[in-house]
Image 1: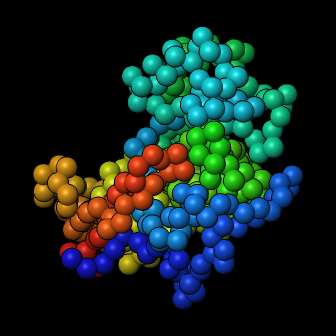
Image 2 (image 1 turned 90 degrees about the horizontal axis):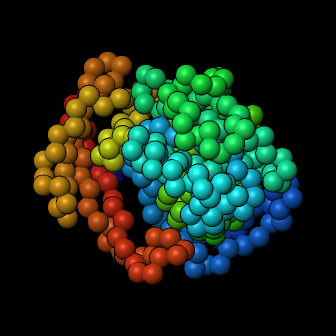
Length: 330
């Protein structure tokens, strides 16, 4: 099978220009934050050195509860923050039952006194996307309030969440906080753990649920793309809620056919060709294109090299690599 779902970070292209970080350890300065350097052993540095691909690593979540909670966050943000400890277990239980992911958010540079106790329900399912903001009088309200868009004021612009959860992985804070403070968008928040720490800086764009990794500079190109209803393909990890083989197929087809609209290439069929859990897995993924179906064959196999995938990892592990071949619709 030929082709891959995406090049490594040192080979990503925009037009004919190849972009690569001049220094994998460098951390840019931002308002209130000095320029710095990461230890060469940090997971995000090593991922850049290895050329790990972030393609097809979007989260399975499709619905989110965003809870404004400034102040420090521990490894488990919700239970190790200033959120009401008597309410946190009940909120976690409800979120698990309803399939909603809870994220803590704070404005870049926020102090505890700056909180307006905002919260939002986000639906990223295709066709019903939306963000609804409300204000709570107490944390306990979140356990009983409807999570369906019937409460709150609907937002009319993209929402950018930048993972800055240093209590979970230092790379997220060291790379994420400068990005959050300089990103040229109207609605930017720091957020708790998104996953894929080695791909910091990580950004989640809502309501559509697009995950991005290794976002360079101030993220201006990402913001410009979404302002125009497009994805920023060089840093796209995948659309949250879609199966990984679909994310991989979408990435390759977007690149091949220049289909960058946020709603382009929704899946119409996914057929597994190998048993679940096989070392090498294959699928046929069919996507709905503007001129008809695009059929792809997708293969996933373990990376050749094992490595610690987070700064906290105790043992090395293999990531997955994705390889996509277009069968029809080109």
